[in-house]
Length: 83
Image (cartoon, rainbow, N blue to C red; front, side, top):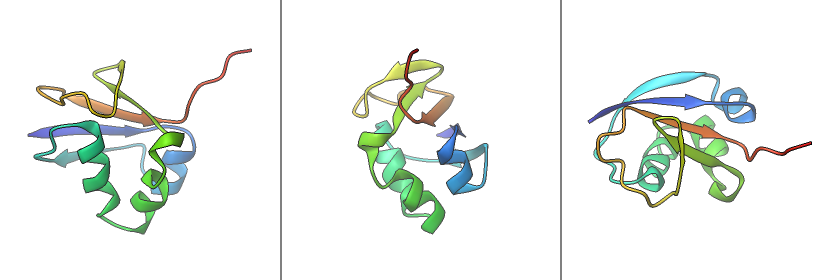
């Protein structure tokens, strides 16, 4: 399956891309993050601590172990704060 992967804030800075299209057989965002982290040092640095990253599937906040199913877009971003 092909998904658009979006990176926000410091993740975009570490990876050097705002988005990329990825071919994957990952079943969950966690598996997708592991696939991406294995690509190169930049992805590994950005996705090494999933506790510091949130994920959304098709613009809906999601759990790391949720099924990717037919998601078209996966976004990785740091936790948001209010104020």
